[in-house]
Image (cartoon, rainbow, N blue to C red; front, side, top):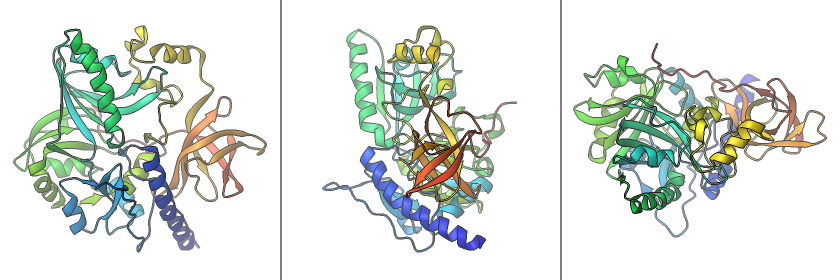
Length: 427
């Protein structure tokens, strides 16, 4: 019976991968996750939703992905692997027990330099970037004039006049246009800020409990002294890299920027470790959902504010003194007065809830929200989801219903993350 249930869940999740891939592309969803698939089964065909009239972009590892059996899909205009020969379910569990290597080179990395860099960037994001120590970083959010989230971003304070920033592939064009618009205004005032987009670099994410061991074997740098959120430059297997101890899985790991010419060599060296496996966008998405992390285009968009998104913690204490960023007054008011809905986590019975699943009161009489991400969790072996629910219904333990395929399934509000984070933090 257990085997039958697992097979049924796998079939449901594979089917959801097809529809949700297309939905995310139509919505311009972030590349930071990939698909809304949390599992797959052997024999599922590669999902090919090629952009009409355009040729997909390829990372420098594209041929290696194909050679190693990667099932390639169109994601945000890039040909990317959703999975390899193992199932998405198996790949998810492998990352939590060993280490997985993800090619995330479709994401956009750039550097800002100049004496006015930090004030400029702080005018566009909610984080306290000036308060970061050199060589450390954080997650932050670009906001619009309404307080809505334009994108989420990882920003590293390299020095007092230099930032290294990574944004989502699906938001690349609008993010760069947004930055360049405001950059032009600042430069017109005589401010000194210059932006360099790193088209010549690839990005790899090495994630899992064996990630540090695998990278340490290739470098003389002491990784035991590099903690979560910190940035360093060193050589691995004789190859110069930029390494940030962070990730999108809830596991310990590193996001590694490497010159395009050396990306495949570094990948091959890391894969010589028997505990390291290449993984695709499918497990990357199930891992981030288990970790309770947002996917832009699903859980966040330009009509959702950080307060509604349960991301108030990204607004630095110093930034709350003036709220001197786009949409600051809207966000200030929401912090003071509260919001009518917010993002929470759920567990449920029956078929897994998906994006746009309607949330109803426990008696089924009224609509109280909508699921934004949902799947069967490969690690927890149960249905999990995130979504927005009206004020008063958002308390942990509250019983509700999900409207799935014409049926009202039992669900409950729970704390996130679903799987505890295992970041390597400073004692």
